[in-house]
Amino acid sequence: MGLVEKAPKKIIWRAIEYYKQNKILNIKEIEPDCYEADVSGSGKKKYNVFIDMKHPKKSTCTCPFATENDVICKHMVAVYFMVKPEYIKDFIDDEKRYSVDKDYRWQRDKEKLKVIARKMSKEELVDELAECWLELESYRKRDI
Image (cartoon, rainbow, N blue to C red; front, side, top):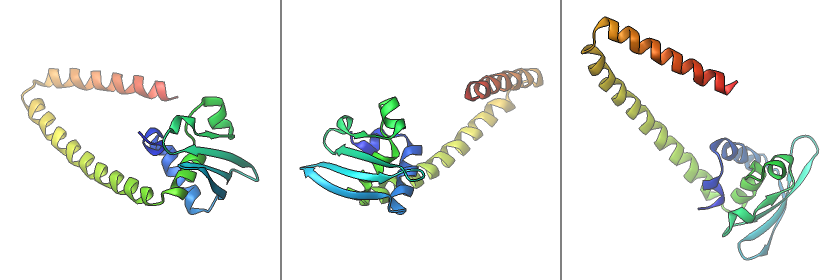
């Protein structure tokens, strides 16, 4: 699994913006499939990034997010896109397909639930609705 596949989608979208804004500086291939670059971060900060295309876990960045959390950051993915810009289009195409599929699944599942709901009594529906509200509220509290 590659660097992009291991990164959260939010990181990938931010990396695409960094790529489009030409924030990747001084990129060089230091050995086959290994690249080093400086990436312009927030404000006037610059971060040193190393990516290993074959071994993504060896990739590093000097930004606080990557160093403190030991994760893939937007700077690493932006450098990756500098090396393989065609992956941006692939990612965006996949996201569009998933969105269409998600809408279809949502509508299909909604129709199935309507069939089930029509067979329930009013009391059963009220009870299910109350359960759903309670569960939704517990999810909301987790996100705070």
